[in-house]
Image 1 (cartoon, one colour):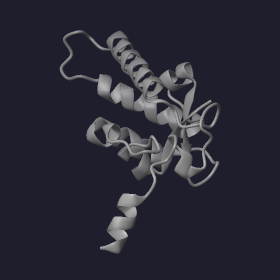
Image 2 (cartoon, rainbow, N blue to C red; image 1 turned 90 degrees about the vertical axis):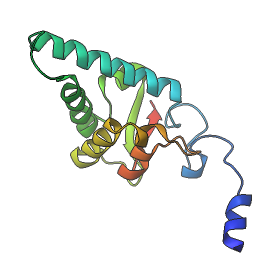
Image 3 (cartoon, rainbow, N blue to C red; image 1 turned 180 degrees about the horizontal axis):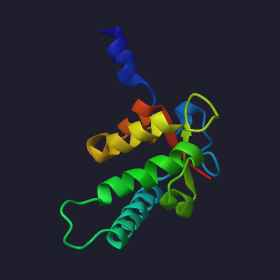
Length: 141
C-alpha cells in the first residue's frame, strides 16, 4: 500500500527524457511527437510509391506494408534511421548501449508498429510501448 502511494506521489519529470538522463533540448534529446509523426508519414508515402512502381495496379494484395517494413527495418538496423527520420533529423538509439540498434530490435519495433497500439501509447519519457519493449528511444540529431 505504501509503495503504491509513493509511486502516486512521485514527481513527474520536467521534460521528456529526464528520467533517462537526456538533455531537455538539442541533439540527444527525446524526439518530439510532431517530428516522429512526420517521419512516419514520409515513410508510408515512400513505401506506397515504391510499391506502386513495382507492382501491377490489379495485382492482388497490398504489398506496401511489406515495403514499409523493409524500408523501416533495414535502415534502422544498421543506420538508426528510416528515410523519413533522416529527413526530420531524428534517429533510433538503444537505451542500454551506444551500439547500433541491430536487426532483432528493428524487426521487433517494426512488427509492434504494425499492430498500432504499441506505437501510440506513450510514457512521460516520450517512449511508446514498441520503444520500451525493444529497448530503444527516438532522439533528435
